Length: 299
Figure 1 (cartoon, rainbow, N blue to C red):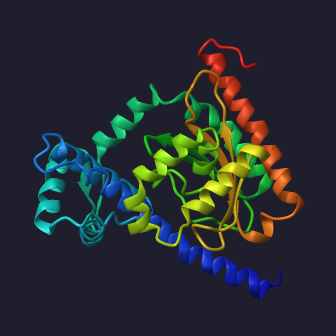
Figure 2: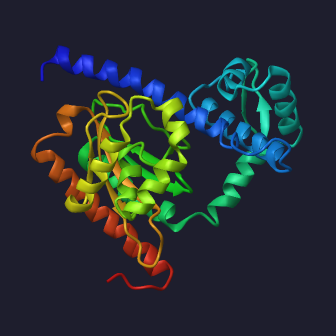
């Protein structure tokens, strides 16, 4: 691939990456839209969704999350969003930046530290594996975790190569089936579970991912069961190709996956199988560490 074509691929990946990030933020902000009006927990869940949205947007903006962007993505009235942010500020979960944006406050940081003591062991045990994958491949490595019918990017490590993947960041939330890690998790589902997951998210797919073919995703899942890894040929963020494998922990429901993402040139040919082998090795390392910590043997 020539330099001009590679630059074009990078530009497309960046553009589609921005679209994917907006979709992820939308999913966080609208996590409770399906709850019925008047639900007692709805206002609490909306506040927590707003807190997550502030965290995601501010993580990429040194001046914090602008109120206009929070309002636009959340789809809530400006006055309502402002009142909710003020309530979160009063509790210390959000704070106002000097330039007017919003970011996570001290209380959120404390909660994050407390959460580390009870974090899912797969997240803790994945750190070394992700560092090795990023170092060996010089690409971006991810840990994806399942939560209900969605998946969340739980960790990422960037290699020192020339390609920076901006399609997925820690905290991004997408319906199951969007992303190589998410698809890898679904390779462990039964056909009925795959159908149920896509049915549960049919409206969000139609609204936020209209160009995604569910039948194509099911085909990738079926192929992934046979190959032991999934290969995403830039379906979600154009120019961003990826390979993913499930982390198979004995006695636990399918919940985690490792993936590597880059441009097409680095995700085709013999390198696909080399990367899959690296991912599978690290996935076994994580599973063995999790089982050891829980007192179970990996067989």
